[in-house]
Image (cartoon, rainbow, N blue to C red; front, side, top):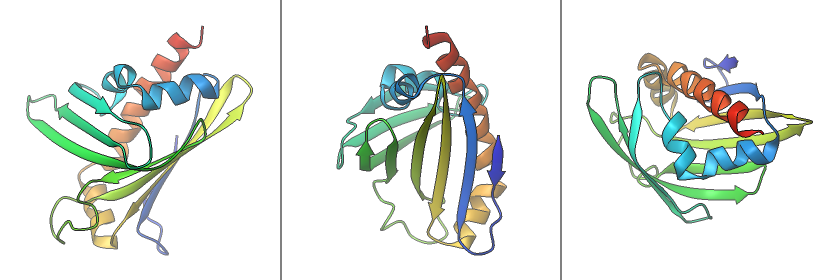
Length: 160
């Protein structure tokens, strides 16, 4: 996995990798809650609640449980949905979240078919460099990398 978490020109974290499954399989793993609950989050994380209405303006309600048992409820809204190549979402309160709170980002996933593999890029656009740096400090990229490893294992199992 390639991670660019410290760009000096924009408050973004950019991640790239290749999944070992065709684009239609990878897309379904990103948008079907029965799959998302198996890979979302880092090692040891679980997802007891995952409800998704995957369309522009649709909501995604998610509860993520950390290995220590602590749970976080998250509510996102889908901004763009272009099956099977692009998915954009952000926290429902992204535009109004006060500075100094938990960092929020607009997440843009793009998928590109490469035969029986799929290239994935995630661009996490933060509102400020301070938010991006706070996300780096709490292990944002490492958690996504671990989740993407779980996603890849699921993709290999489902590619048939």
